[in-house]
Image (cartoon, rainbow, N blue to C red; front, side):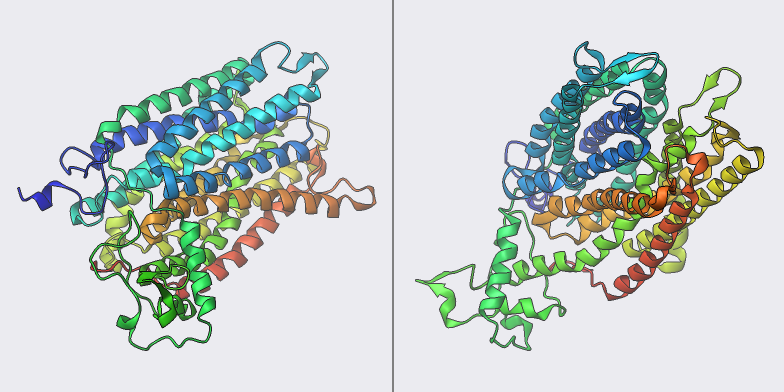
Length: 568
C-alpha cells in the first residue's frame, strides 16, 4: 500500500499527535465510543431537564409562568455556553481535550444537583401543605443547574463535529459514511432521551427526586468513561488559532483598503503559493463572487509587507476572506432556526402544563407523568431517523438526482413546514379541551376526563420535524463551516435553540402582561382551564409560517462553500 493511502489527507492526527493511520483510527470503530458517550450524556441531560418544570413547581414552589420561564432561561443558557467551548476547541485545545475538560465540570454539576434534592439541609422541607425552599437551598439548586449549563456547553458543539472528523473528507467512501453518521448521532441522542423521559421521569414522580437526579449523574460518569475508552482510535483535528482574530483581520484589512479596486481577475487576489493552507487544520477555499467588499482584504498593495513579512491586519489570503464570507452566508439561515427552536421548546413547558390538566391514567393503577409524553417525540425521532436514511433518501434520490436525496436546505425547509403542522395540532387539541371544560363546567377540576394521549400527535410531529431540521442543521453547519471553525459553527447552530428558548420566555412574558390587564386572568393563568393556551399556539403557528416564507427567500440566495481542488 502506498504511503499516501496509509494516512488521512484531511490533516487529522491521532491522540499522540502523529498523522492518523486510516486503518487503525477513525471510521465507525471510533464512532462507537462517541455515540455511546452522546447517548449517556443525553440521558443525563434529559433525565434532569425533561421534568425540571415540575421540580421547580413541586419543590421550589414556583407558579406556572415563573417555573416555565426559569426552565427556558436555563435551557437557553445551555445552548449559549457552547460558544465558549467551541472557541476553546477551535482556537487552542482541540475538540478532544475540550470535551474531556468540560465533562468534569458537568459531572460536578450533576452531583451537586443530586445532593440539593436528597441531602437534609440542602433539600427543601416539605409537609402536607407543600414544599418551602429557603433562599440558600434555591441558590444551591440554581448553581448546580448553571454548572451543568457550563459543562454541557463544552461538550455540545464538539461531539457531533468530533464524530464527523473520524471520516476523511478527501476519501469518497468515508465521505458518504459521514452523512449517515449525523443520522445515527441524532438517533443515539434520542435513545438516551427515551430512557430519560420514560423511566427517569417516572422515578422522579413516584420514587423521589434524589434517585431521579442521581441516576442521570451516574449516566454522565459512564459517558466520560465511554469517551476516554476510545482515545487510541480517534482522529483529531489540530486547533487553528483564534477564529475571531482571523475574522477581525479580514474586516480591518477590508476597511483599510476602502478605496482599493478589486481586480476582475480572481487569480490576482492574494493566496499562499503552496498547496497547504496557512491556517492550521484547514484546507484552502475557492473564491466566490458574492460579498465582494471583503475581497479588498486580499488585494496586494505596496504597504502590506513589513521587511518582507506580510502583515495579516493589512493583507489576508483568499481562504481567510472566504472563511468570513462562509460565516456571513450562514447567519440568515441560522436566524430562521430561532422560531423553529421556540416551537421545539414548548415540549418542556406548555405541552407539560397542558398535559398536567388531562387524565394521566394508563389503566386503573398506573399514572403517566405529563413530562413523560416527550418519549413520543423521542420514539418519533427513533422511527424517522433510520427511515429517512434507509428509505426516504434512496427514494428522493431517484427524483432529485442528489446524492443525499435532498439538499441540506431542502431538508431543513421540510422540517419547518412540519413544525407549523405540530403547532396547529397542539392548538386544535387545546380548543377541544377547553370546549370540554366549558360544556361540563370542569373549570376547577384538577384533571379533566380527557386522556393525555391526545397529546401524542403534537409530540410525534415535532419529532418528525427534528429529523428534517435539526439533523439537517448538524450536517449543514459541519459541511458549510470553514474547516478550522467547525466547532464554532456547530455552537452557532446550538445558539438558535438558546434564542428559541429566550424568545419563548419573551413571548410568554409579553402575552402574560398584555392579556392580564384590567384584572383579567390572561391566556396562561395557573389554572389553564380558565385560560386560552390555544391562542398562544396560534401565535406560534403564525410566526412559524412567516419564518418559513423568509427561509424560502434566504435559501434561494444561498451559495454553497467550495473547497479548492474538490468538486462541489
